[in-house]
Length: 76
Image (cartoon, rainbow, N blue to C red; front, side, top):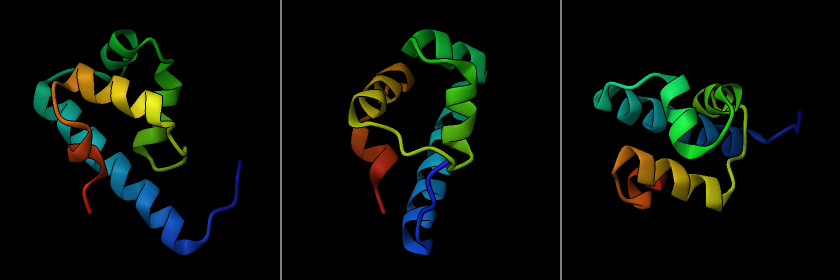
């Protein structure tokens, strides 16, 4: 796992919390989101915990599956 400085880690955690909130608001499980995005469930879980630096392509996949703009996941 990559070591991130504190500011980078805070960004990843904030992204993950927003991702989880939108997923839960939509009422779907990590498994269902994984299936809709063609990503692995563990990838979704680690992203939600802020343990993964999610690529732009995967952010787009996640936003599309959650039916939200990409900016909703990346807003400050």
